[in-house]
Length: 249
Image (cartoon, rainbow, N blue to C red; front, side):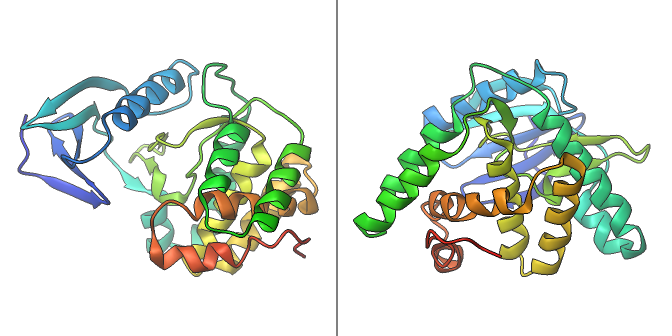
């Protein structure tokens, strides 16, 4: 394996290109179980037929875990949008259509979204009353079994020169209610200081999926709370500001 060509750096991981392969190399202190779970999640998504890079290898390098995937030649949807804002609406249409396609698939062995969110809400330092209200609202939401990416944003979509999209980064995938996944994507727009883009995305998704806007908004406090424990101080205060169990309009 060649580790000379770094193409990206993330928290506790570095991404390399080695010819036709992408290598995701994790830091030494990265959880072994999390690496293996990410590989298992990716393999399960491959089986659904969703357009993703193939996973070829799970191994170690100098005591560090690594995952080896196909290298996909192209640019992220985020890069393409920034380089050609005239096509922003076209990319947004593609973005929503890709998410709808993901939600149309099933993978019954994936972690259940409600179980994961209940665990994360309990890990927050929110007061007991707020946690109780969040757990209660979560339990009241309909149980679905749709595939939910968990980190669906334009930076996780690579588009080849021929125009074929590939969706990457399946570490957080679950099965559950699609509107929770949509609420997460909306919050990701807001975290990037693009509330206008988030509002436009949310309205388009609701229109295409015939989902009431108010229904997605009911998920926002739940999703914000569950995401606030991810260890990003710069995001935590923003996310916690959404955790009051009220109706957002």
